[in-house]
Amino acid sequence: MNQDEWLNYGVEQGFCSPPVCYTHDGLPTTFEEDESWDEDEPCVHIIRPYHTEAHRLEVEDNHSPSVWRKNG
Image 1 (cartoon, rainbow, N blue to C red):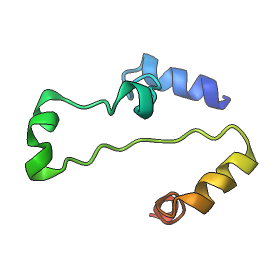
Image 2 (image 1 turned 30 degrees about the horizontal axis):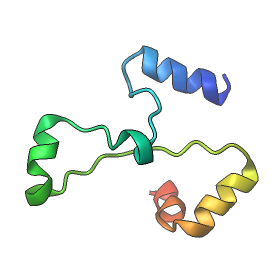
Image 3 (image 1 turned 135 degrees about the horizontal axis):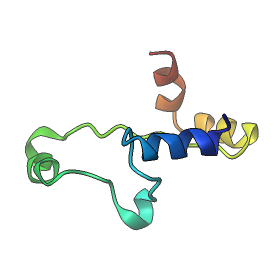
């Protein structure tokens, strides 16, 4: 199964949302998460698909949690 098939399977099975752009679409949250944002700062997990190995390395070089969280 390639990456696109894996992501589509997750969407079809209801395991995750379809891909959205945080910059243009905003963070996908519930109403309750929006309401509690100032109090609780809800944790919303996301994944970042990489286009190439070089892209992965660039993201990891610029975003340290992408490195240390993958082993957690």
